[in-house]
Length: 184
Length: 221
Image 1 (cartoon, rainbow over the protein chains, first blue to last red):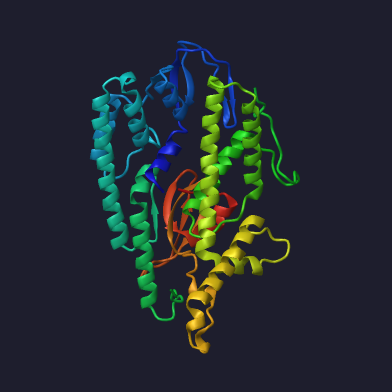
Image 2: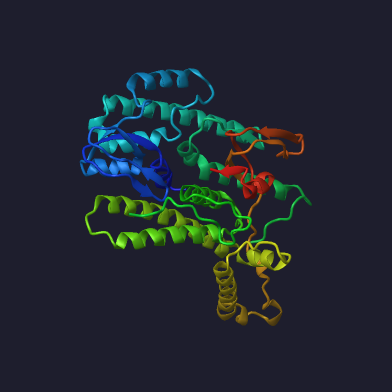
């Protein structure tokens, strides 16, 4: 899957905005939105929030977890633990990137947050590589991957799944009689 | 300006549950991801596709009556574009699989017993048949007819690789499952069972959990 498609899925998450216009309820196919009143916070999907922001029609309220102190705690925990710690949002990486790129002026300490999230990401990806390595060397057939986000899975998907597939093929061709060989 | 909030029922109305449009869109997204990540072609969901198309047409008709520059209309358009993207990506990935596995897809369709639901929509079936015929004609025209007579036959079922059901997939559990048998990778390991808790995520072989994907108990990610 393309990373942009994962980002597309992340854009479905809701975020609070403070509009500067008024508008009645909007009845979308996927659910109702609004009503919008100037100064009153309202929850909308991220794709709409970013569009309104670009047209300077709203201010985005950063999600609760997008806070330098909270992220610092998460980073410390992530570095201390050997396993993946629960992350506050299943799309933390994509949302950070989207919101910081388009609405950095609405987010306090934007630069600090960018660095912290990057640190968390790097730590987690390093763990992911280690686990993938031991998964393969121990020839496991099942792994539990709680707390991994879609973006993280996606970065390793093609490489890991293809490697497993070819290793399986090589192995099953080695054992005579087990499984029929693939014709090409 | 629109009544997209109203309920509707499935095409045959009998066994289909009544879904709200929001649930329908969520269903479409799930089906899309499952189709994207499963190694084989999944059951067709033409009913769902038709319902989504209906919703989109309905909304587009409504939008035609709105004057340009309306803020609401632009929000609706953006939503339509997003849904349309998911829908086309879903249909496209099905066609890609039909192209990749056409002899096996057609074989499966042939061996399907009367009354079982088809894996292909009527349009996909027509496409698969045509694709098969065209490939055979092409092979004959460029290569086979120049071969010695005893080599002029080619068995498509053997020539095209089957979907690899032993591939690993990532999945998230939607309904708790107990005692899923995990087959060992090597001979000196023993098979064992795992429980899949609701909400947990796993990496395992597609073959083990294929029935759970079609029943909707797990979601591929």
